[in-house]
Structure formats: structure tokens, C-alpha cells
Image 1 (cartoon, one colour):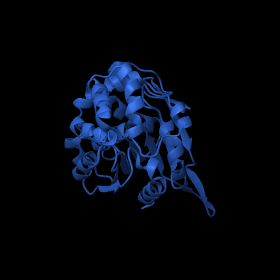
Image 2: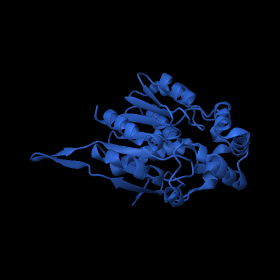
Image 3: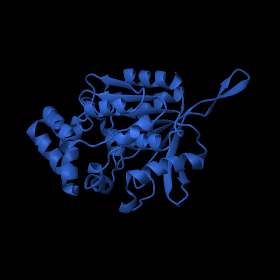
Image 4: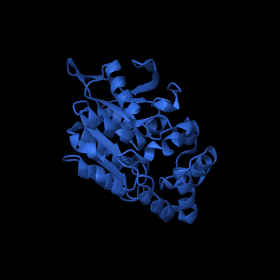
Length: 279
């Protein structure tokens, strides 16, 4: 399905689970949870299967960010965090989704943080998974080296500072397997629509100027921050910064897990998210 935003851009989305469920003679309205995918330059399919079990407590809505996945192609001047934040709010306004629970994974967490800070009354709750408010290469490179040696550090440095199509392919081959101790399913990886030009554009500029940390104290909704002990691209220190900046945020660090703790510790992670949603 696609929805058209006020500026004419169409975003592809899908829904898992119902909004209404029977409760005796009445229909009970369940919360809507938006699952925001990572990248930039990937699509929602990276989250759909692994987080589908959460449909027992909420209606799940997943969409592809502007310029990514099956959404409209867009152009580089629109590949900006500010635009992606505004798209999230416009998406909900257009579909009349009120007070959603936001779950942002990686880059999706950046979008969720920005929207929660700039529109404090917008989300009901916020879950930030393996994300950051300010990109710190000085934290990421040592983690890549710890997990993959000098070669991984060098490949990550080249791609994250001077990205090209060639460095993108090299990064995906050498560094992506270090994101999680549990290997990605080959079919899942094959299904992902990759828009390398979007990711390369981001790491040529805005990745190094973005700093949401000063805005995070404006967030007022209950917040859960998830981090993996072995995450190379958004290390635990990034999650600690987020949790420290948001009033009363709860931080949970998963030992032995990497980028997206639900990929390595699915039972525990899903149970924790479910408990947070219904509390």
C-alpha cells in the first residue's frame, strides 16, 4: 500500500495486525506501533519478520522512508533527517494515527528521536533500538577493529568517511557480518531493497553534522533504549548518551548481542518490548 503525503511524495507501507480486537461484547482499540527501519538506504523488510510477534499487543505499521525501499525515489536535497522526521509526522497525520508508539531501529531511531523531541506530544511511547543521537566515528572504528581486526577497521573508515559504490560493496561484504553474532538469514538479506546512493549521501555530510543530544531533554514520553554489547556501528556508549539525556529513560544493554538486539536475543528482546508496550 502507498499513502501520499501533502507534498505529493508516496510512501510504501504495510500493516501487521488489527487495530480493533474483540473484548466481550465490545471492540477494544489497541495501540498502533510504528516500526522505523535502519539505513539510510534500506527498507522495512529488515524489521517485518523479526518483530511480527509484537502484533499480539499492538497494530504494527511499517513504512519505507522517503527515497528508500518501495517509496518514491525522491532526490538528494530531500535526503535529510529533518525531512524524514517531518515525513513521519505527516504520515501519521494523513492516516489519522494518533499517539503512536515509535520503535526506531538504527537510523530509524534517529528519526524517532528527532520527532519525539520536536513534537513532544506526538508519541505515546518511544523505543530506541541500536541507535545514536550523534555519530561518533571514534567509537565505531575501535569496535569494528575489536570484532573484525585491522581490515574491518580500515574498510569501515574508508566507507564511513569517503563513501563510493565501491566502498559500499566492500563494507557490506566485510563489515555488515560483524553487526550481529547471529548471521543474517540469506533469504532475508536478498529481499532487502538497497539504495546505496541514499546511504552514501548521508555519510558524505549530514552524518557528521547531526547532533540531536541538546534536543533530547525535550522528550516527555516513556522511553526504552536498547543496546547490544557487541554493536560496532552504534556502540553502547551511544545508547548511554541517549538514555542520560532523556528524562527517566530506561536503558537495557544485552550481553552477547549486536546491532538490533532482537536479531541475536529475540525471545528476551521481544518480551521486554512487549512488557514496555503494555505497561
